Length: 595
Ligand SMILES: Cc1cc2nc3c(=O)[nH]c(=O)nc-3n(C[C@H](O)[C@H](O)[C@H](O)COP(=O)(O)OP(=O)(O)OC[C@H]3O[C@@H](n4cnc5c(N)ncnc54)[C@H](O)[C@@H]3O)c2cc1C
Image 1 (cartoon, rainbow, N blue to C red):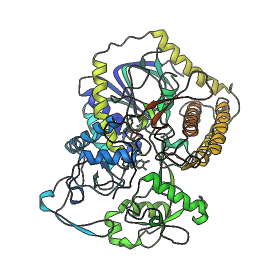
Image 2: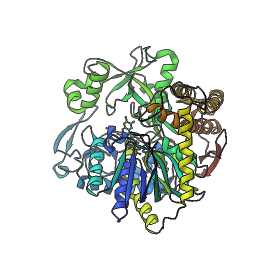
Image 3: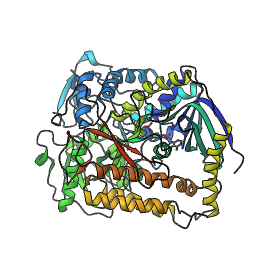
Image 4: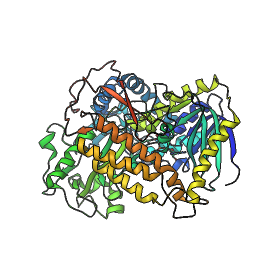
């Protein structure tokens, strides 16, 4: 390790995905100096893989006519099973259309409407009037009342990330990629920045800032089966949790994507035009969902599929049981033209031609609604100067089930809103820090690394423990949960937490060694897993994606509240607190599937 360096800036953003870059741009536009840290080059962030699109009530296309932020609001709140913050939802739905148009000005090639006949995923045909020609198009996605998912062909996240990264470059915002934040620097009241580790050299750096923003994305990789990128390990969340001062919201609210392709678990979205079949080739969704067979809320579809598998009607495979997705009736032409990426995934990763063969699909972990709990301005609870945005945050737009397409929209909307608040905060703040405090934080992290390299902790293997954690979550904290399974998970994860502190490296640990990074991350990841499992055990109701077989009903009397998980210093388990959910416009009611 060479002597650590200190960087001083106005705003420090941890994460260069859509949320981080959008926030950084907003702060830099107000004349602030901004530094972004990222594990990977920004254009390799997880956001880049999102294909489905982004929800905003533009009302341009014929299937979107009559749409409005009010309808988007109702879809989002119902989708969330009333677990969201309705102030936040209102702000979000009202801001989303302008955010989409702004992205067009920054170069996103949104797919546009062409006048004339349009063939829908169910093969029916509608007429797009001349008046709409050239406007931003929308497609069916996310089970919404009106079609409002804007898209840039099959590369929406890609196009958005490239456009934002272009802005970041042109504004001269500093990006330090292959740099991992490993701890927050704070004085017990205020966040002063982060300690980071250079993934190329292993050197330490202190980044000091007036405002620090956690934009590190989701933590799907806690689970053994997930659609998430390998970098989605939730370190930003554990940084916040480990301060003992701020908290995570609704960590038990985990979304499972219904249709993913084994064994890569890539989501295969066909816009609702396909049929889900079981091992007997029985088209089963109409038994449960007669009105809108394949497009109920994601948590509902995932449960129906899992029920079918549990009833022994799944197809056995080396990657576990799966069901089938049938798109053959759509025809080769429709598939090649409109479901190009589905066709490519099937061909390239499973050797399947979807125009002629059935596609194996299975639900796996996809999105985390929980995250660093913030207020509507994106400010984290309990630690001044700390903000969070995007999937890493619990702003709380999504409650207990995120609508497909609302998460990309959240990154650019929340990035704009929170970026402004971060800037306001930083402009009114002077950076006061004590060198001793910074040295203390650096020394603590250097000591962790030194002990690992010296082999002082023990002989546990980091990858074996990580695998075990993933399996425990997938088995006991998945789509169906119950008290005894969750107790088993909490006990097993508690034991893993102890073992995670006794990791010994197989490698030397020096230089750019992935094993050292994994060993530094693991204890925090297990703490996150415990927050998920303990939150799920305590919540004795079923809401959105949190389904308790032993408490199958939603309980608005006792559980119309948000879980706040704290980790007091030295604790073995999280401390759970609760706060009420804000209901401003739409009272809890029946969660009817959109027509
Ligand atoms: C396969 C897939 C498809 C999806 N499709 C859609 C879709 O069609 N529509 C939709 O709305 N949503 C979709 N989602 C969800 C959506 O893509 C994500 O929620 C969203 O992109 C998250 O953006 P983000 O900026 O919060 O985080 P990310 O894009 O995950 O970025 C996180 C950033 O943080 C950095 N980072 C992480 N830890 C650290 C650390 N410790 N130090 C420094 N940097 C760090 C990473 O390098 C990265 O730059 C999809 C998700 C998946 C998995």
